[in-house]
Length: 287
Image (cartoon, rainbow, N blue to C red):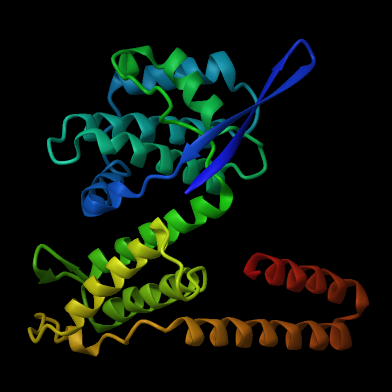
């Protein structure tokens, strides 16, 4: 998929808008299980002194305001993830595209109100985190992703994240029936969110990757082995069809509408109006 990406540069109170064409790459999902493992490892991995010092330089040089703890955490985890991936022979060059997705989603989720551009944040890291990134070539890799495409990539990532919490290394790895069921329910939810975006006949990269996931999930359902905790893949619920996902989404909205009406009756119009805004926001997000 091609989009036009807008970059805003501010210099001497002059705003310059630059348009360029970006193509979204989903190829890193071929080895997404590796990225998931590394992304989990960085949460508990020791922060090396070079990484810590680099991020201190970044904070002192560019990010003196806002939530500095979150900024440091994003910086340190990015550099640790980069160090892990650059030394991996399994992922080669595609890891840079995963890093771009990872940085986009982290800034989107952790700093939603600070209006930070991913491209600018990475460029700042490259300028200040010289001990870690001195040999990293990132030309045209890091950019601010379109929100819709970022949402699609995040759906796929969460699908595989939960899948590999159920089944990995040719074994069922979830701890018990309750845990396994929760991961399965997460797969159903995220798949429903995704299949709604794929009307019949649509064959873009996202929808093809969603089909790949469905094939993988259905193959797991057909396995006859049983885990030590008694969980069987055949116990997994089937992924919803697009029609089922649309129905469930509509029913959820109707329930929210009923709550709004009840709230206005019980707790008054002021609180009810707040819920009305929430309702229409949810409708807008779905459409």
